[in-house]
Length: 274
Image (tube, rainbow, N blue to C red; front, side, top):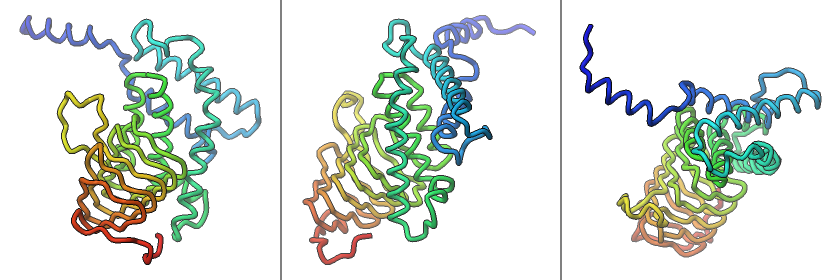
């Protein structure tokens, strides 16, 4: 069989420019699963609960992170330092605390939840938030590709799309979750609750705005009901406000408001909190 020479040259150039390990995606998924298994016994694949076994699992995880770092980071990048996995390990306890607070918020906020174990094992919102927090921590270390691959893995598993660059506060609650989209310059405060189908997006997708704030801000205590769309980098949903289902919002909303749609904003003081 004779191949077309220009095609071979073209393919060779493409492969030479992107010499990632052949199993980079499975490695990222392994890192996600292994991290969740270390932080939460609900996802663990090792049976011993001794300190020695946990130390061995942590060492294995850090070795995997080192392997990923070497695979995706260009020479000279900060995360190529041999000490990076060890430094990152010191942040895992903070990540664990944040994830536990998210689980507690979900348990307290959902009458259907019977236990924290149920939340951790079965709620897609918890899993997506947990992987987002892991990815965001790596993003803050300027690690390329892996943070985005982690959140896309969560997206594939849960239907929840959170960009790793988004900034999200404590006790975040995603209920049901399918179809949620949270853009990369979104800011979300503490004790915020989102339902399925919510979009926190941009009014424009012009490439020159890549380094500008394009996505909205949700202050503390905001609740956004199903299928609402909130767009724009200057759009601020004031604290303790409620955005009704199917609302389309492109302007800021004062604190303690109920937004049914853009032209209908009312005080929410007489409404029961969800």
